[in-house]
Length: 503
Image (cartoon, rainbow, N blue to C red):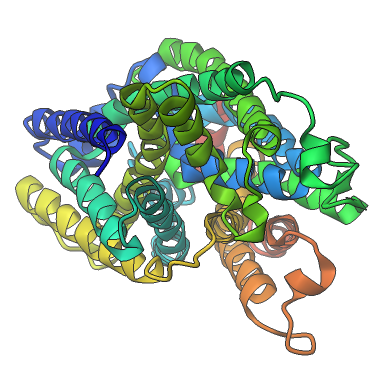
C-alpha cells in the first residue's frame, strides 16, 4: 500500500466518521415517525436547498453524466439542460404550493398519504398504487447508488467490487437507520457543499496542471466532440434531443425531492431555498459536463476502450492530486465528494421507501396503529430490508450507473409527475383520474424499457425515445380522460383546492 493510498484512506475515514456522528447526534431527536420521516417540518432554507439538490443528483452527477460526455461528446449536454429547466420549474411552481397543500390536507408526511388526503380516498387505492411504484423504482434507484459506491472503492483502493459494495452500503445504512430524515438532511448539506467544490475545483486544476485544456476533439478521435448537435460523431436526432430534455419532466414526481419541500419550516425559508437550489444546480451541471470534456484532453488513457468512462472524475482526481501535485489527502477529500453524491441520494431513497411501506401500507392500508417508538423501529427494519434488496440488484459489477438511474428516474417521474402537477393546478382532477395516472405512467415505463415487444427488442431500443417522455404523456392523458369521464370532486375537495390557491 502506497503512502498516497494511506492518505486517501485517512480522508475517507474522517469523512465517514463525521457522517455517522451526525446520525448518532440526530438519533436523540427522533421520537416519532413524523420526526423520522420529515424532521418535524423544521428544515431551514439552506439545508433544504442543498439537501434537495444533493439527494437529487446522486453518483450520476459525478460519474454517469461526465462519463456520457466523455464517451460521446457534448451532444449529451441536453440531459443537463433538461434537468436544469426541470429544477427551476420545480422550485418555482411546485415547492411552495405542495408544502402548503400537504399541511392543509391532513398534514401529510409522505407523497402517497398526500394523494389519499387530497382526494379523500377512502378506498385506499392511491396508497397501494403509489407505495408499489415507489418500492419498485426506488429499489432500482438505490441499487444505482450502491453500484456507484462499489465502483468508487474498487477504482481508488483496488478493492474487490463486492467488498467495496458492502462497505458503502454499511456506512449509508448506519446513519440513515440512526437519525432518519434530520440526519439525512444534515449530512446532505455537508455532502452537497463537498460535491460542488469538487466539481468546480478539480477540472480547473486539471487544466492548470496538465496544460491540456484544449484538444478534447483530437484526443477523442471525434471531430464533432465539442458540437452539441452531434452525439458519438453522428448528427443528433430530434428524438434524441427530446429524450434528453425530457429528463426534466421527472422533477415534479420525485418523492425524495418533493419531501424536502414538505419539510421546510415556513415559506420564507422556502423562498431562500429556491435561489440556493437553482444556483447549485446550474453550477453543478455545467461543471459535471466540463469534467467529461476536460477528461478527454487531460487523461492519457482512453477509458471508452475498457468501458471505464464513468470513472473519468475519479481518475482525474487521482491523476491531479496523487501524481501531479503529490497532495493525496486533498485528493481524498475530493474523492469524498463522489462518495457524498452517492450517499446523499441512497439515504434519501431508503428513507422515502421506508416511509411509504410504514406510513402508507402498514399504518394506512392495513390500519395498524403502532406506538411512536414501534413505528420508528418498524421504519428502520424496512430501511434495512430495502437496502438488502437493492444490494442484490447492484451485485453485478457491470451494472451501469447511468442506465439504472435512467430507468428509475423515468418510472418515478411518469408515475407521479403528472398527478402531482395536476393535483396542484387542476381542480377537476379526481381520485379515479389520479389512480389511473399513477398506474398508467408506471406500467408504460415498464413496458417501454423492460418488455421485448418488437422482434426481441424493447420499444425504447427500437424508437430511441426515452420512456419518461412517453410515460409522462400517457399518465397525463389518463388523468384527464378518466377524471372527465367520472364524477366531479366533492365540494369539500374543491373548496380546499381554492383555499390553497389563495395562499
